[in-house]
Length: 270
Image (tube, rainbow, N blue to C red; front, top):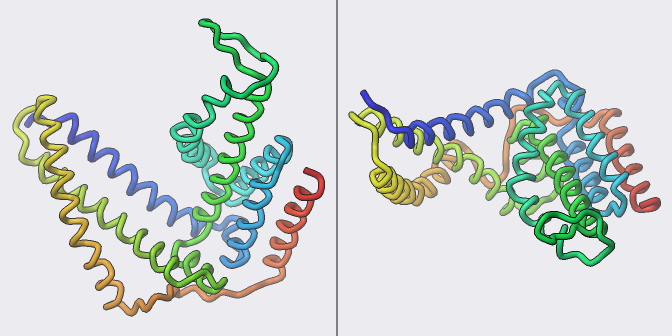
């Protein structure tokens, strides 16, 4: 049986996304350092460090925060290479496109002259470095929180920290909805692959993509209501519940004090 390269690629990407989700749940249950802390303490500490990353006016502070995040990855027994790959992929795909024009458009002293007369200015390179490092650090901090804390615990912690119930509900439904939609897409491409007898042409691949997208959109509208009704039937009433009991210990207080000291140092010395 001939198989379509397009269908194989689609299935591969969907499976890879689902595997990453399973990896995140598994990583949150590792016996690492950050997994020992209370979810509320980790959420507050992450917020404080995100404020520090957004307030830093020197590259040295951003580099220190990023290095601190990588230390947390190692101490939490996470795979450093996979973590950097997840973070760098987002930065390269999105942030680099925004930072690239700043290299040439920001006025300042010339730093490098490229073929064709393009000039990279010193202030432009500094601005681009600030943007890339700030975004990389912020994404790393948020990713570290998600990878070391079960998703339901994060939602419950956010609710206990008085985040509006509407936002918690949206986050909870989005997480479950994305999983269901990925499984639905996986089933559709698997069934399509099982009926293929030859390799598809480029035109047929585009037709398949359009038809699959239309059917998936129609099913997504139906799923949106079914997900919420399924959550309600299982006892969900706008407040996340988890079997894990939250207990605030002395080391949670140390984490908050440490994060607050870093934020204070950035605000005072940056």
